[in-house]
Length: 348
Image (cartoon, rainbow, N blue to C red; front, top):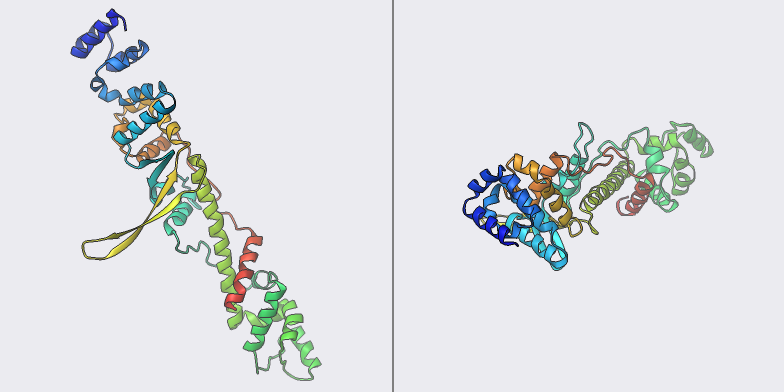
């Protein structure tokens, strides 16, 4: 620093209003001039409380390597309450409500709604679809998708359900079988059910769709399989979306905390720990780089106090883009069939 610069800094720190009048600059213009002259380290920063973001931006961008990380830690400790440093990792500690708000919201099927259901449910079961099976798709979905092993099991259970009953021949196949049995009614057995009944849609519907415990169980299990496949699919959409948003190398970690209240009752609360090691610096830098906007609205970094508030503002300003996916998507039928067949032996 030259003697002239030293004299300037001394006078400015003592009487900033006078020097700004001499230079015909306001406080922000004077700060930019000081930065251009490389004198930021010598001024009283308390003079620039309204320009905190510009000061931090200049200091952060001027540092390298370990110095940069140490300064980022200093910024966090002073201004950001929901970020922690653990070894060489940086974590964002947040909740389902905030993470859900990272997703787009539409009038109808909304990624934000789906994200909230996925993130808020934790280990609980969410069923996005109710009316999955009806009489028009029961045969194709609940019977034709069964493996041979499960078809045999269903045939055995149907034989048990209709044991001792005389079946009225209400379909062409049943009429044919009644003639073969030389009877006015049909007596079922496992082989007959497996090899003929279950291969005929009309007869299968007659026996399973109307007042059949086996039929009801098959419909419920297919509904469960469909919902499980859908939830698994949406789970990947949501967690992959968050992972990509923060350029993370792993999915958010669910944290369960049990709190005890004054009346002795306990409640388990769900929060999330998000790895933001790769993105935190860029997010902070992007926010600080927009310092003129922040100053204009009186919203420097100390106004927010948390990364969640900071990110929400950046999304509103268009500096960060919300996460989106097709919220009306259908699960892969192959996945549904696989889950469905896995369920059958345990429930039929």
